[in-house]
Image (cartoon, rainbow, N blue to C red; front, side):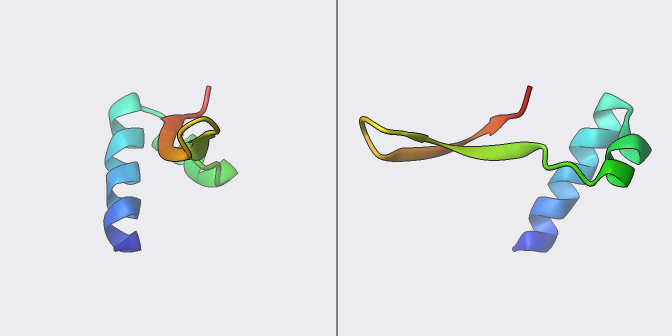
Length: 47
């Protein structure tokens, strides 16, 4: 399952054209944000 997520992230970074740079930093592209009112969780792109 996590392999699949890694693959998705790799495709995404390659599309953006900064694959190597972000691999070196090891930054997480997504962060779980929790909607406090509904208790709903979702992934959002980090700005």
